[in-house]
Image (cartoon, rainbow, N blue to C red; front, side, top):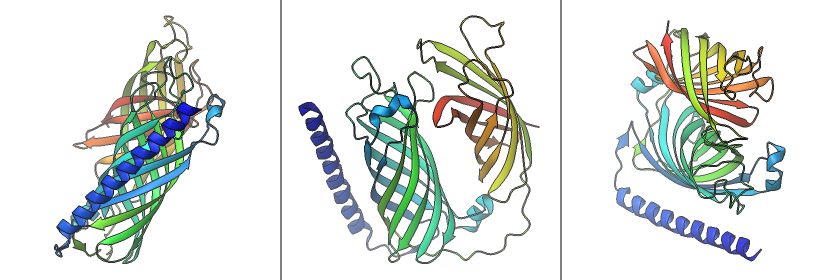
Length: 366
């Protein structure tokens, strides 16, 4: 009990020092830039905030973490592209940025994380005072206390390096041309993508409060009609590969996936997608068995972000392999269009709220 108390005190002191450092840096930045009053169509923003929430116990194997509170500090840099060229390319005025997070997971077995996330914000409402945006992001994370012989309770992750994902909604109140207050609600996830087991992942919904500073004044352009919507029709053949760690034996196994994807309709911001996947997950040394094979159709949505495609699909197995725990599955992907001839990217496959594996993929557009 004494060691746990000391660790919590140490974490609180660490977070306190970080808060003081960030506030000093923020005040220094304001003093340096306070004289800049030029109106910009590409304004830069610095923000500092905190968030808190509960760890989501999404499987009985994590029941010992019931009631754990999570706290986080976030420092962000972002740029808002208020140009007609950006609006024509994206269908909205996009804001992109980088964030640095310190997260205290509230339990000695989970420790803390330092992670960096690249994110994009599509704005849904852009008023003079009130603004509403969505937010999606991904990045890299350092985890202090992964699973090991000395830490057997942490089944959420077994590597020091993992991959954080975030999705949420922001509501801004603009105090003046430079300062704004942001209230956010987001869902966050960290796992290693199946590189090593155990890898049940950390899921945590949070609420946050952030103070944002714009280095220059800016004016949000009025929205004008952009003409006829271009249909984003695309048919592609996809191949993906992952080297997955087995939960029981910790041995590496090959995962290969062949997919057929069709996207059509939607709006400037999205398209509807229909897919079929054929998946092979290595099971022992017997390659003649049908056990490694899974087949299933999927349907979902794809967000169009310039040349990026961020998709979410849900599917059901018509042939379920030995490694599949249930009949329903999801695939989340990020793909980049190369000369409108092919796509490259990564996808995360999950069953419910438990990640299965992360795979790298390439696609040929037909």
